[in-house]
Image 1 (spheres, one colour):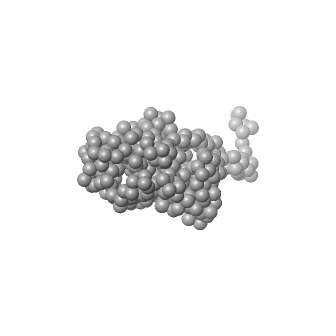
Image 2 (cartoon, rainbow, N blue to C red):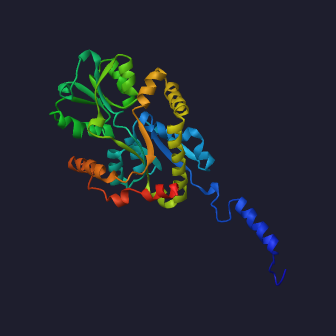
Image 3 (cartoon, rainbow, N blue to C red):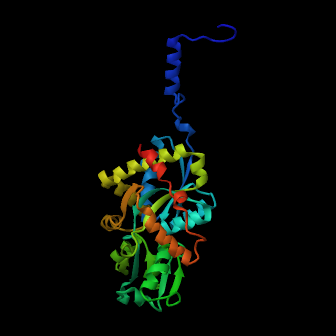
Length: 329
């Protein structure tokens, strides 16, 4: 010690530095410094890749803690995020665009395509084959959802119908099959696995899926507040999604077991074969495609026409491919 200063030998200095690195303090951000993620997800098939992420243990391995916020439909997660009650959530393009318009939400990854999972299913006893035959009937629809918006704004006009030609019955997607079975509605605009359940149980007939008009990309969105506050957490979180992508590709049996167990735990009596058919309609491929803007622009123009948003988003602000790129580096 000289004049109150401690002099270290070179060996002592190197040993101390090594200790700091081992503790996560020598230029490497420690795991405990990452933020807790409030994760929203929908309990239909669209939210199941996120559910698998939460149950996989991958987040914990990277030191990320999380809280789960499960809802019937992604547009509800979007609303929670606009209100800053949830940090992350998945939903299709239409809900994402509305969420950006209302609350500045940003897309940090595209998780999947779900156009084949969204369908119009009619009561089997009615023997319907075309959308135009819905005229005068009762149609269950989760109003405000991406599926609901595509149905009302794109599919209905394309079939030569207009609002008022049928009775829209507002309903959560998880209640629609029982309503069809009870004949309180004649058709439903729904997603998997509920469509496959209705068909397998002889309740309904699928007359179209939405991939004919929209591939329906589903995004992982985040609040701008969370991204600005904790970009390190977002990057670590996206690294976990890269492992999820590998699991869906290389270990589908493990993925199916986790997700199938979720639905059976909720009381759904669907066979594993029925569930496998439903899950096969989801194209899970987390990433950040470079060709997103044209499709989002078309969706935004429809939403603007229908006065559901105030302006076309600035895509350079709404899309954050830089975060996925950092996670991939």
